[in-house]
Picture 1 (cartoon, one colour):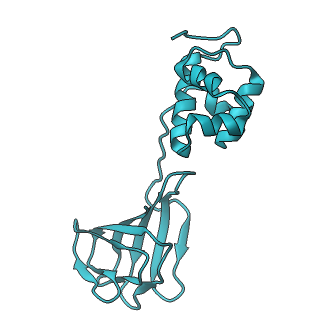
Picture 2: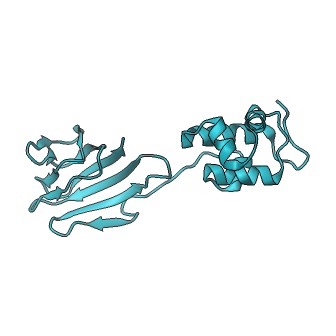
Amino acid sequence: MPESRENGAPLAVIAASLQRERRRAGLSLAEVARRAGIAKSTLSQLEAGTGNPSVETLWALSVALDVPFAQLVEPTRPKVQLIRAGEGPTFAAERADYVATMLSACPPNARRDVFQIVAQPGKPRESDPHMPGVVEHVVLSRGRALVGLSEEPVELGPGDYISYPGDVPHVFEALERDTVAVLVSEHV
């Protein structure tokens, strides 16, 4: 596979990016080529690292794949995200002493959100059903809580894990002060 083009954009990076983004989008070669207005054979060559794409072709592909142009021509870099304890955007419940801190928002085309929960005894956090297919995962870090389906919550202690369908009514009720948990909302 050739290493780079005259303009400096490495063909291997472009090839890998096109393959990755096409798979992420769940599209066939033919469909991406159709959306970009290019020949399927051209896209196949680019994904093999043997094509010679113009800026117009790459721009059309970035639009067809709904990604920024730079995402096709720059190597991917590991993304590290750090949120220190006590930082991050927080959301409080209206009718319960329950605070969720967003730790990781669901990026485009990924299907999960991660929260840290800090809850106090008193009124439970009762959640209405979410979208169909949502599954929630909870790991209790500190304290005790009743967690799970509203009809049958389970008592958790530190280190306990539970998953349950989030598309039915569910509850989180702290049984001790400063109960802490990590909640992952997975959209399957």
